[in-house]
Length: 199
Image (cartoon, rainbow, N blue to C red; front, side, top):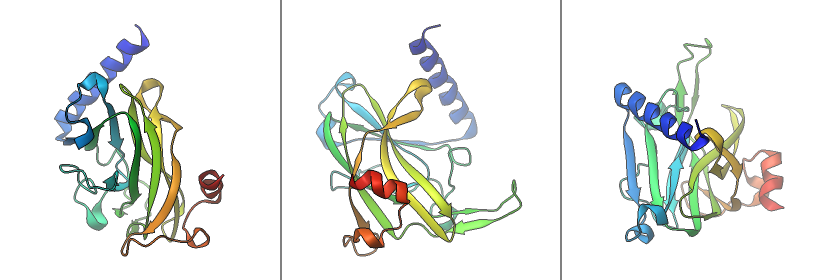
C-alpha cells in the first residue's frame, strides 16, 4: 500500500471513529480562499489545547475560540476531546493569534487533579502556506499548572498526518485581557522557545 493510500485509509477510520464518538468538526473558509478550488487552498487545523483568537487580524466565523464545553472544563488533549477546528486558507503568508486554553483534569488516570485558568498571554505567529498542504496550530508546553510555559507554533503535516516541522516564527506576545504587547523579559515562555522565537 502506498503512503498516500495509507493516509487516505487512516483518514476514513478517523472519520468513522469521530462519528461513533459523537465528535463535531467545525469547518470554515477564510474570505481570501472563498473563490478558490480545494486544490488551490491549504488547511489549518487548530489543536484542542489552543485558544484560537484570530487569523490575519480577524476571528474566523464558525470556528470557536475553544473546543468542548470551554471555560475551566475545556479538555487539554485530543483524546479527551476529539472535536476538530479546520480553516480553509489561501496560499501565502498568514498570521495567527493563539493562546493556551483553560482546562481541568479530574486526575482519574493519575490520581492527581489539576486545573489551569488559561494563559494570560496570546502569541502572534506568522507562517507561509502552500496550496494542497495541511498545517496545525500547535503549542509547545512545559512547566506545571502553577507556572505553565508555552510557545505557539504552526507545524506542517508530516508522515502519517501528524504535525512535524515548525514553519512559523513569533512576532509578539499580547496580553489576553488588554491586547497590549508584552515585553520579552515578562513573557511566560520556555527558554528554548524564547531563543527560537527571537533568533
